[in-house]
Length: 96
Image 1 (cartoon, rainbow, N blue to C red):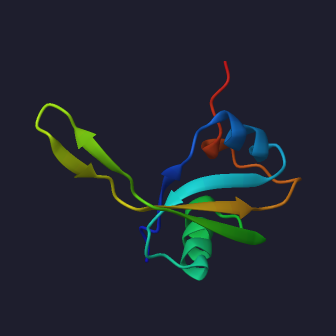
Image 2 (tube, rainbow, N blue to C red):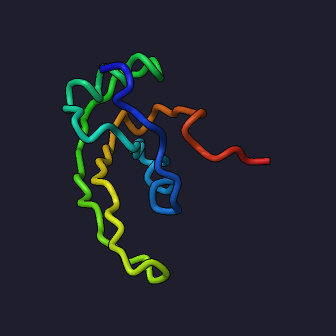
Image 3 (cartoon, rainbow, N blue to C red):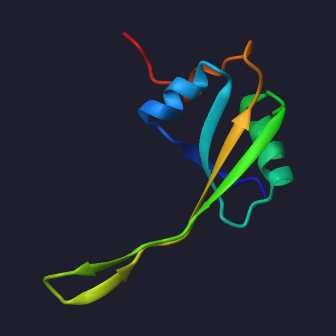
């Protein structure tokens, strides 16, 4: 599965974790840890040491103008640990 990684999660917490070597990514909900590891290796040329996965259930919200429910899709987040001494510059925010 080549398209297992959708993109990085950019929040204050994930940017703080990047200094410790943890990178948080949105991934395909059907992707396994092995598929995420191989896609991460292909995309960033760094082998991950550990991968944790978080499944986020989609919410149901109401469109109050039309009075209909809106179902948000399920998502999956992967926290990839590459080591405290390694950095990936393309996943962080660009500083001036």
